[in-house]
Length: 113
Length: 112
Image 1 (cartoon, rainbow over the protein chains, first blue to last red):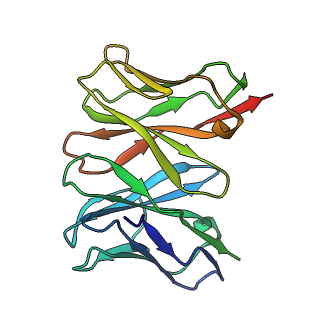
Image 2: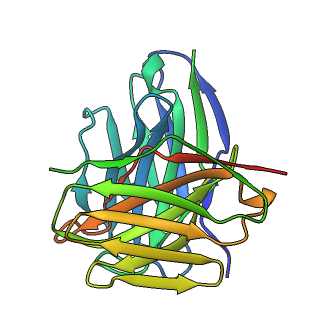
């Protein structure tokens, strides 16, 4: 069974631009969660989608948004990029609706200049 | 509130046991997890324990949970150089879906 895939793996953007990251969960998994990892703040929860509905949201500004498609693939979008958005963005895939085994992708490394 | 803490560094000799500790504050935790992150990589799920369990063993890994003290530990037996990485504990909460709250991470260095 293929693992969680994220594209692209690396991205360089300029302040003010927007970016879209993609996550394909493990086949059959219906939940996708997104996390931001930075040296200063560690791993922080962005949001979770389950069956195309946003189920949980972390404490991030509205510039961060996401969606999930009917095939469970998810995208997250960051608009009006700031230098502080430079981070490793990780997505996690899970089969269940409640807390259960969650498997992470390799991440997308976003650098904002 | 949600707060998960870990010590920042641990250094052990190859062949010794490693014990990585974690404390959490939320008593409504449902599952507690241990993840491993190697440089430039994502998070690898090592093991997890349901909050009504005291212990779980999985090959070289032993997880101990003291719910009264809100203390979680991961013991790695016969630690190898390939175990060098950052280890994160994480908790999920009742009603929180799949949202995980992570600790700060413990960098494990295994020396020859």
